[in-house]
Length: 95
Image (cartoon, rainbow, N blue to C red):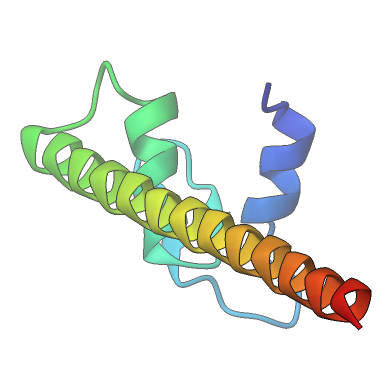
């Protein structure tokens, strides 16, 4: 479950940085356009335009693909490490 506190930390722009984007509905600054797109799609879904909704859905699809890719790479890495250790174990015990 994502809390507002977690989202605040991700979206917060430090005072010495210039925001990359600002929400046109509430004026909240964001470190990147992507964060602003997600914010608009989640927080202002009922009032956002069709173009903003389309951009949100595209970003959401990209994020889901990136997450799948990360999980796939992590699973393959764990699989390879497991078999590497199994192979080393077999070599050590075979003498």
